[in-house]
Amino acid sequence: MNIKDIQNLIKFVAKSGASEVKLETEDIKITIKTGSDDSKGETTYIQQIPTMAAQPQMPVQSQQPAAAAPAQPQETPAETAESKYITIKSPIIGTFYRKPAPDKPVFVEVGDTIKDGDVLCVIEAMKLFNEIESEVSGKIVKVLVDDSSPVEFDQPLFLVDPS
Image 1: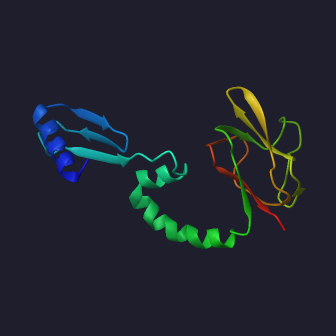
Image 2 (image 1 turned 90 degrees about the vertical axis):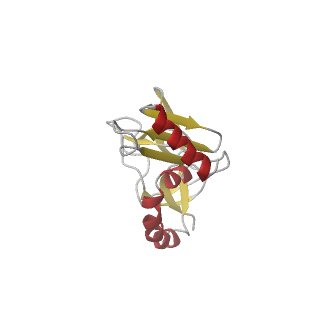
Image 3 (image 1 turned 180 degrees about the vertical axis):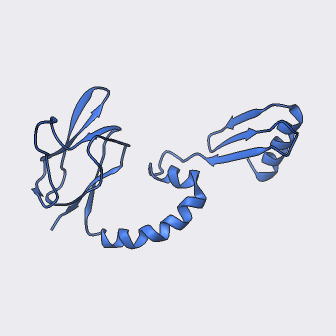
């Protein structure tokens, strides 16, 4: 869909008198909302839908291009400083817990040495508690998520120094 098609769609919706129209194709999602007076209250939202091969964090950037542009240069120095670390990411969506139970100690702290197969945390998904095991050996440098916080698929949880 090109820009001319989108403009024609906006004009058509404005003339039809509809208050809101949503159009979703394989690669684009458009929402057009019109106000009470013909074209002056017109609002159009256009969102690119990511391909299946895109990383899960890419849609966040494509949904808000104005916010992503200034944030990217700020993240670049941090990424280069932390590039020597391995990021352990969430394999599922759920609630992140650092402890096996409220009265138990945390699985790992910053500075702890871990090895392949060590339990790092628990993620609750649909009333099931899934132990997340380390796939690397090293030292915990940073815990990136607060206890009892919701996490998304592929969200960074820990930074590990493999040396």
